[in-house]
Length: 179
Image (tube, rainbow, N blue to C red; front, side, top):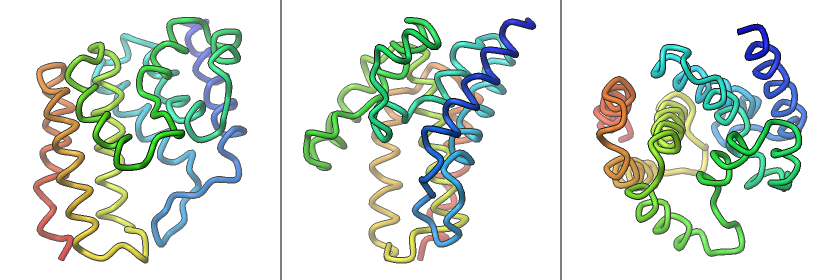
């Protein structure tokens, strides 16, 4: 237990430093680490704190994709299990945005159960952010498109955690608020 607390604190510190210059896309321009904390909290609550490595991966889930942190660095710092989880939910930024979105839908079905937890929590956080503080340049149609795409990704993750699925469904049900 004590070791897990140290590992989680190390992941929080690593993620906060890696994403230090990033802000959320919303009008509030929240620090990006707020998103990571929300995703980590969701997976911690969904698993009742039973999987410290999954919580750590939640904090680190965007480090390869958005911060160019090498997979090998994550292995060295946090172990292969965490690094593999992060890699499993990482998009290939060399592909077009449309292709990355298509692949997320496709890969969700065959993802490991733990990666599905991360995907669900990430999509919940993103829907919550769009509802609370949408990007200023996103019109209602673009917000609705994101919600519909997220629902397609989540469809491939269903069956892994009813608690997370209920949180997603609650956020998705608020799409009428998008205009």
